[in-house]
Amino acid sequence: MIAERYLGGNLAVWTVGRGTPILFVHGFPFDHIMWVPAARSLARCCQSILPDLRGFGASNLVFRDPACEDDFDDLDGCDAPPTTMGVFADDLASLLDELDIPQVIVCGLSMGGYIAMQFAKKYPHRLKGLILCDTKTEADTPKAAAGRRHLADTVLQEGVEDLSDGASGFLSPVTVDDTPAVLDAVQTMMNSQNPTGVAAAALGMAERGDTTAVLEQLRVPVLVVVGEDDRLTPPDSMKALAEKAQRSSYAVIEEGGHLAPMERPMAFEKIVRDWLSKEF
Ligand code: MLT
Image (cartoon, rainbow, N blue to C red; front, top):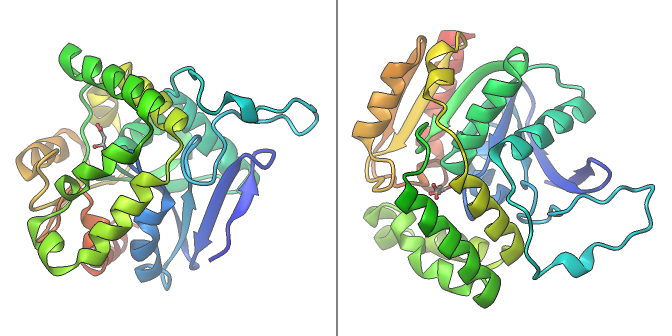
């Protein structure tokens, strides 16, 4: 798996497999690595496209214009404007243009789901289907938004190191006990993020709107997937989410937490393959 760079060299993207194109959008504060096990499992039926979102992993936060000589490196560590879910969605649409893919299934987990909903709102003609994992369509409460702003200040001042103390909270207790390598991978991924990119995305999430009406109006097939042990967006809330879509399927991954597709990639693969053969 070798990354290529798109959008003037600003966005790092990995592709795996051949077949139905699926654009996998990672959560916060993660990068494409969270999707690698699932993409490998799906390699025989799907072309998985795994970008690092703007400001995460190997992608730039501030996009350089290749025609311009300016050096933006000194922005690292400074305040950055919020990266809104709409900006992330625009990046994904431009990426699909460069890849020459007119329509795609978008699969987003948690923050990736917020971005997938923005993509559905802004680019409905490009959406062939939607997979929503461990996410929600509601906006933040004022208290949650204030918590995001506090987190943004903290990571800008102190870096991202303390974030990974909470890594086990993203996983099922079964994963933490039986597969410590997954916990290690999540911690490493969280520790390697750029604080300015993390802060910008936290501020962007704080100002996102409610996208429930977008989901209710979608006519494409929607697959809703949740980890049985997800404490952030638990199965009850995900089932209610699925019931809002017109053409939805709903699946629970046993012994999976908030990062169920990374924790149980083979279970996730089966759910996606069954849904693809039923709907397409
Ligand atoms: C995520 O996994 O992307 C986060 O839980 C999203 C959030 O903080 O709302």
